[in-house]
Image 1: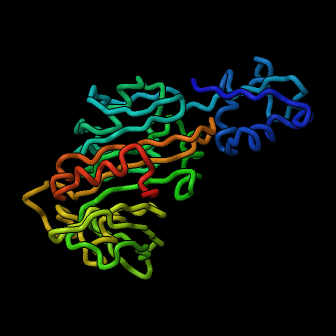
Image 2 (image 1 turned 180 degrees about the vertical axis):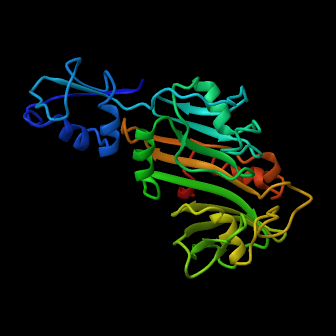
Image 3 (image 1 turned 180 degrees about the horizontal axis):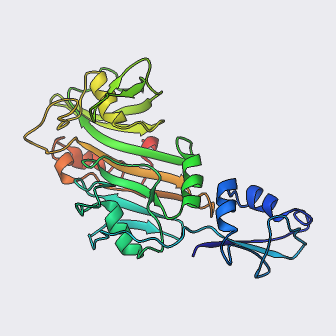
Length: 306
């Protein structure tokens, strides 16, 4: 069970346990209400305590922040590319064709099924953000509801940056810019559409290479709407190659040419700065002649710095 500890310093002495949990360890009211029912959920110096107890200088406050062990009926031993893992999260380089979630009754080979098998029920599956089944690349999975809440608070800030590479056709009219178009769900369909009544959606982009009627484009999400990049590029007349939903199917690639290439974040519990990169898959790279040379420009560095 993931447990955090806090040594009470002079400036923290005299405060109630609940105040320390809320302010120093950032637990929500609902989390505190749940965890205080556990035998060792909240302790002072190894002894179960109440949230109204007063902490003294030198005391050690501990709290269980991990989820209770859970069973997942269709956990499956599915190969995964895990590029980073700690007590609070895992960074997965997801292959195209794997869904994040799926029908447990059908036993779909999903990311959730693979991670429940890997963790053996000791950690839960909490995607900080998701990728469509056809989208490849990096995503972060929190291992508890507590960690998930803290990661989500960083979304769309400089403490959690998601950068993508895509191939669209034709190239955008402007070599860089921001697509700021609200998105809403189409009732009775998996599709989304641009609508003034939709939720705010903003995508920043820069063309890295353009030729033969196609462009390799860097994009950064400033919001996280379903199908945001796919719909935004279709809306400006530049659908992704292979995007059968918002553009046209392609005989060259069986999915939308979209890859989550860089994830830069601050681990909200440890405070560590982390950055991960994923090379462009071959099925997308072959769509842009000469990409091999361009790829050398951003391997091992923050794409936005190019």
